[in-house]
Length: 455
Image (cartoon, rainbow, N blue to C red; front, side, top):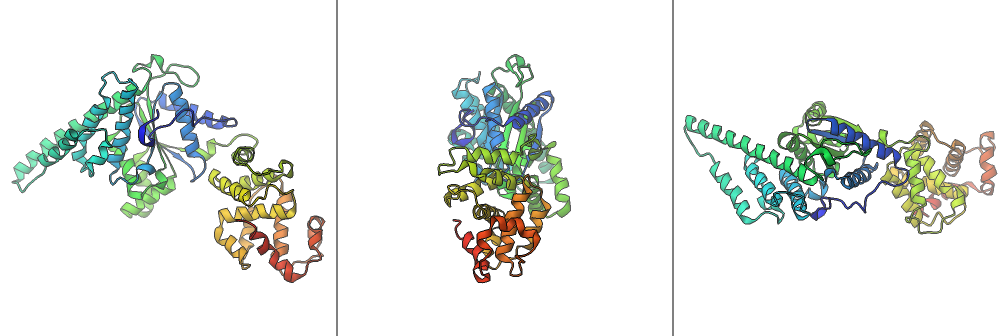
């Protein structure tokens, strides 16, 4: 569903593309698992920053919507400016209800108002700050005033012990009632966003009938403030747990663990605490691997043959194969691959024919992306490359001979004790014969010169 404020997606903008077979399989498996569960869940789609989790989440949501599934995409980072995570979640669900109302999916016709009322009644029990932020223009001043009035009613002055206890017990009963009403409104939203509140029109990716569920994608949590990210997770488990509603947190679990530690300072116990708030973890990068060509290699070739490459591209030069080999060996994320290719495009590297110098430029661009500090030292001719050579040696490549050739060219241009007569470098000098007569003074400055060709 395309929602105002960026809390939804257009099916036309996000679809699985050719070569996404593994991602389609992952989506179908998740849908089947979640459909078979009678209770609601919170799960984590875990992967490194830039590994393609968001692209999968958006394409999957578009596929689910196309088939009439109730689903919601929420960009947590876009709401990170709000002080209270409850307010952020409230905005997302109220907007979803408003969209259902506008599309006449809601039988009651007042889905947004009812949802807003439910959040308004629950808000005082959690000390909600910034009530107007909750409404996002969808709740009238009457509801806003109602929250403030409810807060006032629950203010506890200095009372006798028995009076305080009595007030607390009444408050507790009202609290339970408020959160039951909130959960009922979420359940109604699940049905409103489906094609039908019954399971007769609910079909999985294979066309089989399944019970209606709602899938809520909460993305970009690993980019949020630690307190905000952790607050989202805690609120979901405590207040938003509803039968048939499944929350998938698109994030990096290591980042969330650090968020727990930042708030509670409980060190090694942080991960154990975090485990209380989710049901299972989906290791995204394991599922995104395809047989044969690696996920990284497929992404490299996709970019090199897409509209991203508007420059002159000598396709037969093997640039894409080299980048794909390096990306696979170093297990680069999609974002790192994009940075490498865009950097090389800006420097107009792809218009050149394949040569040892161009291959060296590609390797230097890789270093710039994965270790900018080392790249800076190369540009100033004071780099120690021994650790990088060890890292290369630990990885495996499809074309190791080509990688060795590039590494040896780097050694030749940086090592003052390089033995030109060593049999180990005979292949190197077949390719770099024009450098064999180069004097040491010029040779040891050449890598610096090449590095400065990169923008």
